[in-house]
Image (cartoon, rainbow, N blue to C red):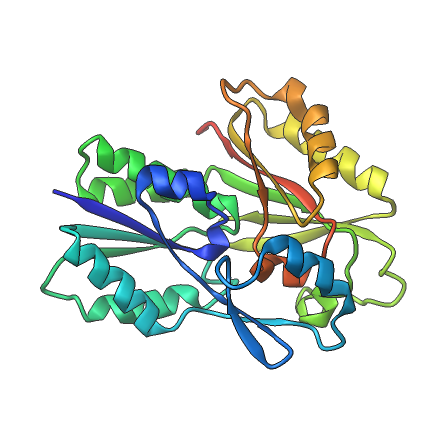
Length: 281
């Protein structure tokens, strides 16, 4: 049985890993100045973050359409897949997974497609997709892989220190979280994503926010795997990595990933963070 893994571009899965595991990434859309760009195809991430502070009208994002998922699933079928696991950004944060579900209906009776809500963003999705591919290579059945991925999702956390609340406010996320923006633009928030839920902590300085991320690594350690994520802030995320290294017991250096503009539209440039998996209790 050949099982194909498919995810979306919010997963931030590095091209090297996607190629290694033959994982298909369905791109989202970035809408800027009346034009739509395919995430990771039509605009580089560096270019996006360099221009983000200067756009008068904030960019918006859009989920891939149902036809894009249908095409990805059909390509998997044409390539010999006998089953598909499609893993996507948390349903509470995006409607991407709904497009995947609608597309999967077209293939009912042709091959099984398991749609998985990762409960995550960025490499929190990517870790699950890579794990699913490893399980498939090990010969596990579709239902077994899906069950193991769902279990793994509960052990994955994302913590990111944002440089400002401005971009969350632009997208209406600050009001959604029940916060008053007045006097908070200089605050350095930390966003936490786990099991589909997002919450914010507020810190008065960047130094304090970074210290908090180090504390998080210590609190949840030893960590099973880690990815370092950033929004055009590679130097800062490397500095964070050096601070948390004492809490890591990893054979390999973590992936360092510049997050998708789909996320960066809400975080703004300068955000840094870590995605990690903890051991089951």
